[in-house]
Image (tube, rainbow, N blue to C red):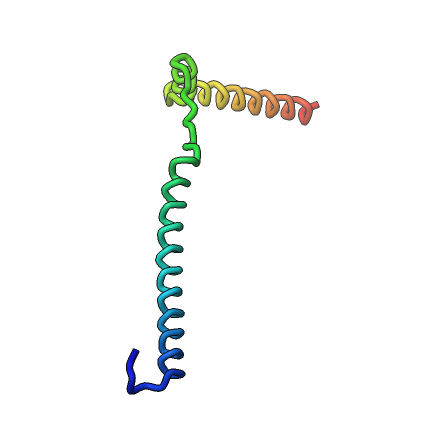
Amino acid sequence: MDDEKPILEQAADAMSSAANATTDTANTVVKKVRKARRKVAKKVTPKKKVAKKSKKAAKKSAAKKSPKKAGKKAGKKAGKKAGKKATTKKKKARKSKR
């Protein structure tokens, strides 16, 4: 303690420095707790599991997506639709002649 300063000023300085010290320590404690919480959260949270397909299922899905088969099916459907349109036109033409 300084002998030149009055006791009240010395006490006020000591209290203010104590308050600053406690806020500083509280801030450092909070930072450490947050860091520790993040580490624990990384360990505790379960990772998302990726569903693995069996080999047969993978082959089937690949076969469904293959462009060759899709093209064949599309060609068959288009042919059927064209055939239906032709038969309906013929039927309409016959009815109109009668």
